[in-house]
Amino acid sequence: MALNYNLSKVYALSDNDPEFVKEILILFINEVPNDLKKIKEGIHNKDYKMVHAYAHKIKPTLDLLGLHVAFEEILQIEAWTKTEGQKKDVAHTFESVKHQLKEAVKEIRKDFNLKE
Image (cartoon, rainbow, N blue to C red; front, side, top):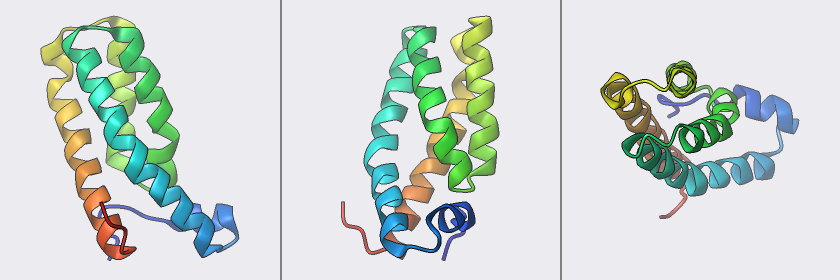
């Protein structure tokens, strides 16, 4: 029932094409979990370039799917990479993003009957 995401931008972009919307959602649920693993790995290793690359990659998708809080938090993670901060400074923010995206993926799978 779309509590964790909002598809208004996706429908506007697609001219209300349900197949296009479904393709966007399938890409999201297939790619974002792997991107999050890369961000986590990068944070753990203080690989700022890796974290920035993957955070930057998922940022437009978060905006497109109406994940506003996660979008703002991914901006914070990007900022962390520029200042090359301490892991503890970004750990909570990353966990928040991860939780929001996990919930969104679960809800999208249910709402659109997309199997794992």
